[in-house]
Length: 292
Image (tube, rainbow, N blue to C red; front, side, top):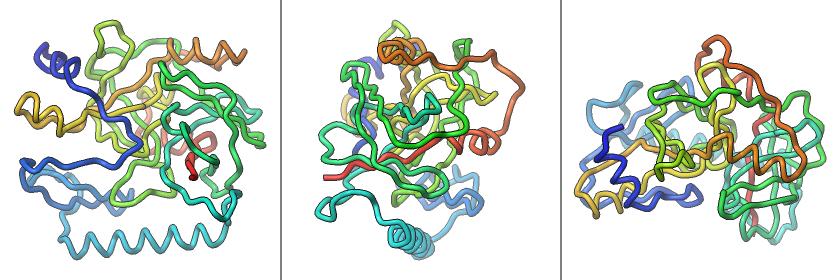
């Protein structure tokens, strides 16, 4: 990564993914980009859409269909929380042990009156916080579930330019009910000491706490933030998008060790498509709900 971009990251606060993205008044005009195969609906610059460009009316129809799907899912499976509470935000978590231990970001679960974990097959269960580290922005949750497989971590650190895949529940006009894959590349480290991985990818609210995989489907970090486009523009005059941040494995390992959890590790294997990484990870990915 160029020095000028790293300097920009060091001097500009990142945006934690617990809030919806904010657009700058100076942001250039954008258009709707929709991928029917994944359900992704996003705003992008003219000419940059790699899927199908649709009108505002068509985008509104897509959002209405998604809302109907969410209503049907909620009606079919009532959440296990008091009826006086409402879901205020979502994040991503993933199993690091088959006995119901989940890893996510601390900011995803902080100040919540109740927590839920929803599996890829639609099962929703209460979640309880077991450990947290505010400085590292990591939290460990427990749920009354036994899963057939937990995440496997890479024994090798990723390098600049390496392909990465983030799995989570990114906000694209509304909160998704199924996990999605976002592909990108590692673009260096922030803070100058390797404490944060920088990735060029369309990271969004809802990705927080989700695993970052290498090209072979092994976990190399935990996604926790994106570039604050508005503040970066105000500070530098440059519009910087599609830049996310993740907590690397060494920090995650120290956190898990405190709870006597030894993560499963493996050397990198053969390359997988983003769709294959998504399919393999679905059994241990959950959507974390924060209720207040």
